[in-house]
Length: 160
Image (cartoon, rainbow, N blue to C red; front, side, top):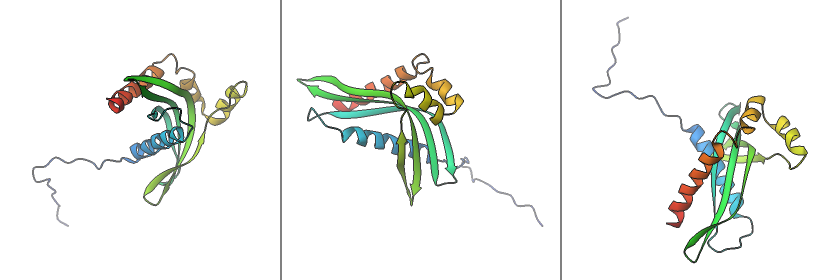
């Protein structure tokens, strides 16, 4: 029944770092790049780059399954005669399902809204009101500009 004194012996105490979210985001970015890389290539040195803005990460099943709502910007570039050129790209909201399988995270599902008149209906079905509200502001709130800057940096590093 004596008091216990704890000491850090002169070292600062830092709480454990939880990198689960970052690992989930990394797996999604890798998944998106691989999807883009698997499409037909028109240039030998073509490379895809991804930037995303995550709106919501929901744990569906404790330590096993997550849903991620994000806006994704994916662009493909190539170099020709010393000049880097953009080939293709897309900018659209996604809903991902990520599962932990053993020690690895795996994207098990990726959904995007359909085109045209189905787009508003799919947004409503796929995303919560707060996420839809953010999605509707994506072209006015600087999100696209930030994602474009991120991709510009990736392109510069890759082709430098």
